[in-house]
Length: 620
Image 1 (cartoon, helix red, strand yellow):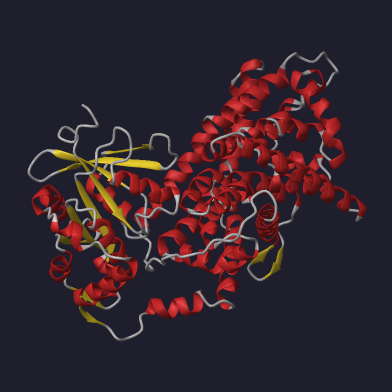
Image 2 (cartoon, one colour):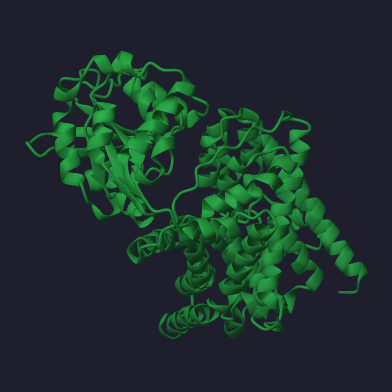
């Protein structure tokens, strides 16, 4: 089938402003018949699916990036512009355009709708999220809006699949609704479009509650320039307290399960290479990371809750003033906040930033955000050296230290951004326009699916990247075998590598075990924990000592200055090959990834050294 032949390959495309519910509508229309790839030669995601039409047959449906205008101001908007104009090689012009409008924010969304109608393509309008409009006291007249626009308008609630059948039918019939007169009718200037959108929105609203909605009252508080930031940081503080306080019983239970498996293997498998492989490699290594799954789940629970409720966009609005102080805008906040989960989607999210210098700066500082892969590293060190004491009612010392590490990453990122914007990415801060989504009660099902997906990603990494890196390290630690009375660490290949690295890292307080763990941690940061566990397990002949949790071994072997230096290293170190690879892809070369890796390693070494030397000087 030739993609360039529209008669054989029918295409429809969803277009609309960000936060219009486009992706939810796409999911409702296509179900599981979806595929995700990148546009040829472009790093922006291409999401496509098959829509079954009521009368039989199907059409390929594209979910285009959210856009405020076809006058592209960002990589995302450029893709939307090219698709609707048929400028991608081998890609047919969409046969039908489906403009998705937020029913509760009609005036803003109708500005873009007129620009789409000017193209003269067969068009259907999905008046989405009508349930939220009704909740806010709006009663709408889709027929009046349809008459004003000259195209079919279908009310929908995508998340509840309301209006989906009617919308599919309208898409199937859209060609018969094409009207060449629309092309000239909507050829307006931007001020004219805004005035027209205002009149059409007023004409489509049958009634409007005059009372202030609860949402407006909440925003007056949450977006207050003085109160809002305090609330934001209080929420973040509660999150990091919960990561330790809520997760501890579950983490202890998982650690007990891993310990039981280790005991079972020790009791049933004869001494030898196979038992060593299972206990020192698989269970000591991978098991030491899996026990931190509860912390990961709790962190993502709060992130998903903020996203689903509509608070995340408010946080970006609040941070705009702070971001402007370092030469960025609030647009950079969402990618940076996404980087708390993982720097990879955070870096990819910078495609929505129109200013190339802003985008590059955001990419370069994204790895400084404390991603979830760092959490097991932080958790094991904090558990080993910080007592679980309360410093105030409901405030634990361990959670306080974790919060401080996250703040250190944020402060580091802001300082680096300020330096970059004054030097290699010099330029004026761009403006910030953002539409705030409606508040919503998160759906339990959506939260559960989101948590399961992120937990599965973590476990899959444990079963693939972490497993492979840990086993490779175990092999290097286990061979050649030590002579009686010799240390296995001294005799092994890995031991010789660690001895060489220690020359460079010993001045900042790192021992050979740490030096060795930093190498496989380049694959993924959390591998550092499994690498330490495997190293300590291999480097002892005492099976009871080898079976001890990595937390206990670290607490017994490290000094507090070394532990603090290790934490400081991981605040800055760019130890994730996947992040480096995606940076190369997003910047179209190795220049900026090399620069990023270089400056981050320098910062890691310098701040780990300062931390170690200061702690020693203070007698810690």
